[in-house]
Length: 292
Image (cartoon, rainbow, N blue to C red; front, side, top):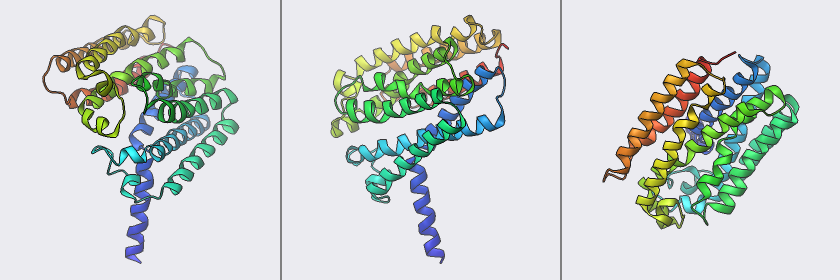
């Protein structure tokens, strides 16, 4: 009995790993931010629950299907070869139907408990991540990161439309912040694992254009993030505390990127870590200092 239980627990852990919980958490934070701005405060608890559940399941399902379609190249890279599918701890067919089930449940929840517009943007985010990024661009073009970033920038829009049932400039500003944040966040990782991607035949920016070119593009995006991060203040979404915090956070991000660009050390581990902290703090302060 004890052995069977351990096997079941290990299997459950593998399925959880397939959903990329860390990414799901970031998706939930940014979705809730969109909801908070739409309501100018915390929306009804029932709507928050269903929206976060639906969005979280969509993110999880998309992550599972991404790993299903990428299982061959994941097996070739040091960073990903220990994932459940390359290891063989989860059967590919099981992973596929697990991902499809999560996505199907997500769309049903969003349709019946939010509204058609929020459901549309949830489906659009999943479509972009699976079809446009994973299946169409990832193995063919270094532009996959930038174009595929549409999917990762969609959660605040989903959260906002779940509350209002309509679009406005506010969720588009949040979308723009996340859209510009994603490429430099990923390229630091892509530089660190450039050899991995080369072996797997994935034309990421460092593989296709070189590390120095990628560093320059990383710097350009990070520099562009500074003025864009201040838009919530100038549009009247957040106050002076946010203005100061966003300025400091973005300047530190820019300084760290400059150090990374001119460094001989290609890893950039701390810069990658800071990029995650940056986004989480930016959105947290934005909510804290929201103008009602």
